[in-house]
Image (tube, rainbow, N blue to C red):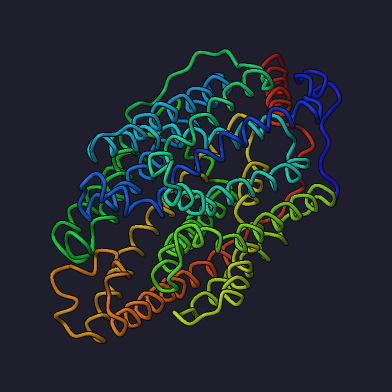
Length: 528
């Protein structure tokens, strides 16, 4: 299938294309920044019990150390994406990294859990900018036809950062002369390196025009999403899913988002241009991104706990056990990207990724405390292969379908909904996990063993007698498998959604070249 070519005069009007060497140099800074921003969300997974013990925090704080960073990252992604269409992308991405450094330093030297929670919000805002802007900058530099070659590597970095975080966190916690504070401090030198590399290598033209940010829309979107994410993290823990608090928070979030849609529809410079959803590809890719986020994040984030409790592994070994998933994701995203660049066809990889991801979720739904490491590694590799083929190529499909002036908005919308799906997945499936553990513990050990909310706390296996230890390990194995069985239909639905995306030839011009072409065409039409 051949991609459409642009008129010669339009290409001549475009800015000079960066050479492959310049692209790789700029990507090095982007990939370093992307890795540490994603790492911030996952590196604390194995360190949380130690952090909570050292800072004398409660079980509620345990959840919120993860949730606050995810919430801040998710809620601010659309704003970063909109600003990328209006201001210097280079300055914005360096600013987001600077915020991330500030939050990491505060977290690394925190004296108590209150300061730690504030630092996680600052980290989340910076990570939101990095997550949204990295893909936007890539689309500005590289034509969609060539993007697959680089997007595969970038998707692998995203996946590695997501899955390798618990491994790095486990090693840091188990190393006596480092400790959990380095889970936060480790990102600082890498972020500074990324800022330096971007300053030296990233050269994009800045579009100078009068702009107006829709601050009311930004406030409404952020508040509405935050309220729904807070509800999803508290429901089933602090109050029942079917309760007055649930009704109030859900209704409040929905009303705020409905008002936001009204405001956005009338704003001159909306944060999320509603017209991009007229594109069937963008709407379907967004829907699939939500489902992938819920299924992937909601299931995999609890694997580390399964490794440590159900299989009795140390934090370091638990992290190493994630390597098959990382390897599967790395190989599939890279190979798929290269093939997309070579042949220009991309839909088949989305469909195949959805099918393989669904199979991986179903296979992981069969695990228990007796599952061998070899079998578990195969199942995880299957899931990683599916995610690698699907996740990043959804962004490619959307970027190829929108005008260059809306690249930032379209990219940030997909990132936003994927992150929101992940945050909701972690919160909701975390509540399901806690409920299943409570129920199964009561069935096997009697109601007294599950009373008083004690099952909300991660058990200390070294203090349990042998018979109880085996039961607890079985309970966590069964409960974790249930999460993947819940996620499997969502992955299948994502595959079905992808089937309805219409495959279009990939553009051969970069985002900045397309922008110049569109502006030249617009100017020509006005002159006539």
